[in-house]
Length: 418
Image (cartoon, rainbow, N blue to C red):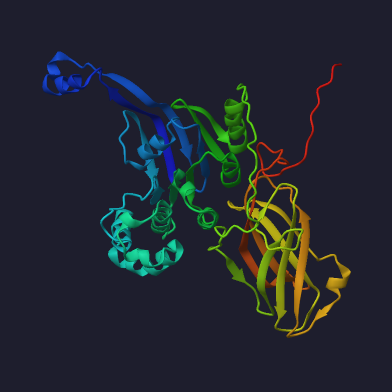
């Protein structure tokens, strides 16, 4: 189960010279057709095996969304066929066909039945769907009053309430906030680990490289490349930037507040054996002020307060920084710091862990994991770990040198006559 096979797939739309030509063709078919065909997709051939993840990339208008509609059967092909084996969950567009005059709860029942679930199954999943969507009392309000982000939250929650054999995701997730995107990617990662086949449309080649083993590059409605994700993504980037003379000007940076209240987290996970509790986690600037927005090369100070429930020795304080789609960028711990390893932390005591690092991340939003780990165990055990606990943003400024990638490494360039 979970197989996608596309054979000689093509989609064309009729174009008429004027509005009367369409009517004439309908009423007088014996006079012949006056339309021409505008091919959106032609000669598309590829196969996705069970458990594989394939990213679909290409510029706007390349035919990505049309291809997904043909694969899922929401549009009919002009030539060829697309065959799917397995239960499919698809996020093709904002709202996933929700009726604006019905409440979110009513739409959940309708959308769930379209996915093949019974009313009883949907009712049993409703609490989980509500908890994942996190739209509160709006679940019983008409969908027409929802923001675009709320529609995405509810649509994704319904589509993924039960693990599908095949998950097909268009670019609708780009509408959601950073915290919800991370929740979605974490659920996708979980499905992938359990064998779900993934077909994923995005402009973000780094996400494709991280999530997918293969990629399909569409260009002007045809397959330009299909194969290993890195090779195909490199070909895509070459087509975008390889031959273009593009000049970009850095806009003058306006001072941003050090604390952005919109960077609120709603997807934290926490676990541990209970011998310690990480009570609070926060970030500060080099001026010792609370911050979650940093400029290029700024110092980032991470602090978290730990209260010990039992006396312990031989522990390590640790943290990890990740992208919103789960790529681990940097982490460190105190496993090799003797004064920490040899110290006994008494029951009832409270300490503050402090890490300071120079920001070398590209502009974007990032997540922090923090943990207190017992390294004497085999395997090591976390006394307490908080995953995706804090968000922070790196803004672009005059010291930003990176044009692509995740690391902002200062670099200089000269050209010399030889």
